[in-house]
Structure formats: C-alpha cells, structure tokens
Amino acid sequence: MEQTTIRDGYFDTLQFDETNKQLHVRFSTGKYALHYEVNKFDYIRLLSSNNMRSFYENTISRKYPPEMIKI
Image (cartoon, rainbow, N blue to C red; front, side, top):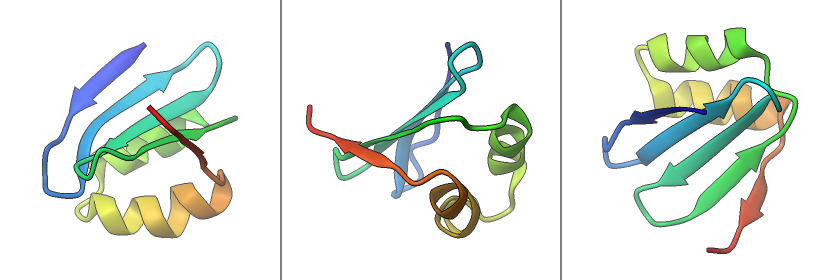
C-alpha cells in the first residue's frame, strides 16, 4: 500500500491500495475515510492537483462515497 504524508491542515495521510482499489484518507482532525473501487488515475490526479482539498471534495468523495471509520 502506497502512503503519502500531506499534513496541509486538511489531510494528514493518504494511502492507496492498488490491489483492492481502496483510498484511505486520514484527516488532520483525526477522522478516517475509506473509499472503495478507486481508479488509480483518480488517485494520481488527486496527488497532482493544485487544490487537493477541492479535488477530493468535488471529485473523489462524489465519485467514490466514503465510509467513515471509527478508530
């Protein structure tokens, strides 16, 4: 699983499991979201976006509704 540390005030870390097509998102608030059936291209677009928060909220979360996980 590929992990990227962001720590931009919104995200803390992003993890992408290419085998299971899952995007794991840990927010700076401590909340944790899991997105299923995520296309790797969309994950790459998220990482390369000029505004990751906007891309996440407007593309990722709408296309792949999150399951919020209690940790």
